[in-house]
Length: 193
Image 1: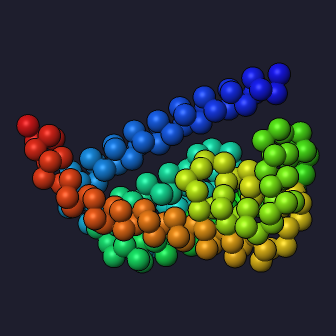
Image 2: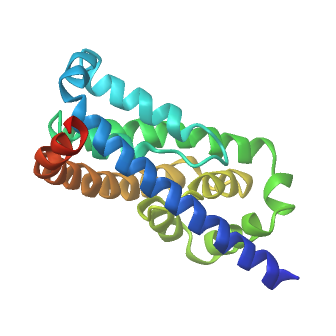
């Protein structure tokens, strides 16, 4: 029975990764094709990136595309500042899950994945929070909820969350800044023809 649940969750995560890949491809094409219009949207600039990442990460238990936002806008804005704005918004958004965990510990206790995350947090502490924040996994919301439910101190959650997400966002920002301009001519040929 437990093995069936694990197999189902693995299948679901493969579908989620495929969907995330499709979203990244679609965003890449849209950002490349509508680059000039995005520059006009840039009136909000880094604040717009921060807010977008905040809203994307404040949805508890729904995969959030904040890495796609950072990847996409790094070809329009300075990548390091895109990473800073994206990280700040993402970490602020993760507080929703953390606060939800403080308010409702039963959510973690009655959930197999939540219980597993709780075991990792018990065993590895801040290192587990850092690793989960750094890896491109859609389950970090559960880590925030578990940390809140376990009453992990605010700073012991905030610091590894920020560092992990910042390093991840740096990778996405510089990948987007380097990759999107290289792909622009190819995408323009595909879209125009």
